[in-house]
Image (cartoon, rainbow, N blue to C red):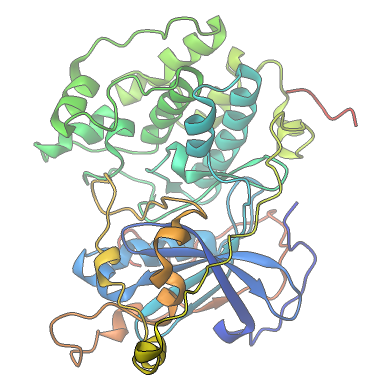
Length: 415
């Protein structure tokens, strides 16, 4: 159930109707902050992207694609977009707020996760991917722990659709190194390959491995990229030690280098995945209706610590008061990137980031500038980004992607 389900919003809602609070995460092109709708008090995650950085990195299409995918009618295991705004320097997307963090946080804190939890997470993820593949004709292409959020009761939601594309054969080298399918990995040096929705099911195999074992099967974040890619293409694929037999068999069916032979390929791909013995303890109708209570319920998020301001010496007071009125220069932070190969906007960090980046507080109100601040961005390329969903809950009984084109833009509850 959405935090904002049942609320009807003014169709003229604008950015000024939100109080923007502390940072939830950050990535190569922007920040995500907690945003409170002033009239209703509902909380959202506001993703703010720098137009200038998107242009420099040639990732404008990715941002527009993400907006087009997320504005479609909702799915319980995909974050929902409520509003999209823009100003001269930024794009802003108002999304579901998932206070439980992401699966990377769970791995970081717990090292490995229990089988029952992994099974339910992956069942929910498979429903989300099936919705993308079968209803929207979209390939996700960026499955990894950082992109699976947990809502307030612990259910999984896919987020970050900057690499998503319409179905069909693709020849682009994009994704996160450890999660790349072989048909994508070989595009690093070859241009005669292609890939389709089967890359997402390979990603599910990698994800299950990492959740159960604590590492990905072909490398680590500290390994050189070329070595990880070589392992993906050539290393022996083995079932992880000490893992449930059905889970190990499921992983091996997903980590098949030939995409045509991989579980999940073909017209009945989603159904084939969901029919695997790994999911026998669950019914997908029950999963879809959220009838299984997650074994991990995220704790109530703590408010960010108040920042202490130290009074300056008397002789500096007047100078400081002037400086405080000027926006902080955030340009150095904005260059921070992760290990994504094509600039996917990974969200990193947590509330603690605010303690180290006090100057980030007003990041969403100003932009980094280049050598010539008067050299305005071409706003025409961002045409059509604005979007408003008047009602927060929309039935998912019918779906349409409109004009979206690639590059254009546990057990049942007993309580």
